[in-house]
Length: 276
Image (cartoon, rainbow, N blue to C red):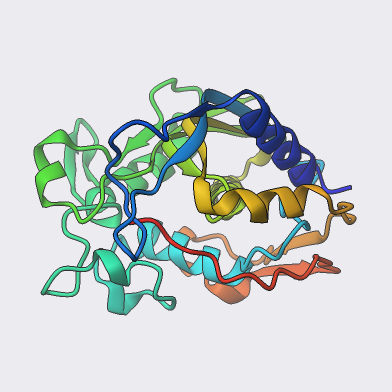
């Protein structure tokens, strides 16, 4: 059984059995037909993934791995907010007249800040510290810039990463303010597991743990039957994962630097409604 499946099943069963339902409350998200998109949720879910044991790719349904990596590189490597520079169309609904998502996600990572050693953006500062000051307890990033929230197409969901080197292992904590369990959970886990592996490789470190902290972990009302169907499936064995060992520069990674082999997954024939 894929460990990612095990974690997903446990989380979803807890949400459905113990979660708080906001059916009677006013909510911001809407379905395409204008109906309020209500949820059942848990607060403060924490999941841990040992990246030396297994790459956390679920099998209960397919996670489009290459598209997830493409978005990760768009944010962390290109530091872009322009949707035309992203291979998929997942951000089209939040694009403005200029074709950007405003001062969100990659835009924030690309802003330069002054340090005693010189000017760095957030990504380059992490890379610098992992090589030159790996025992620092200050290696982190944040996309939640209050001064720019009014100019963002969407407040960042996965908004903070904290990196910590223990011995030769690179560990990280992903903080997420909100998590749609059906559409985004494994997508984000895959992305940030890959990011830890990338940073570890170019810094001469070994991958350790990814800890995923979710403040509002929820299932939307129209997604519940699809999640329940997934929970009835038998998880399949985890696939194998390979990162091109020849890449030593973070900015040299491409979609083709990542390979997943023997990826088996259950079919999922539903058109998933998206709440906006």
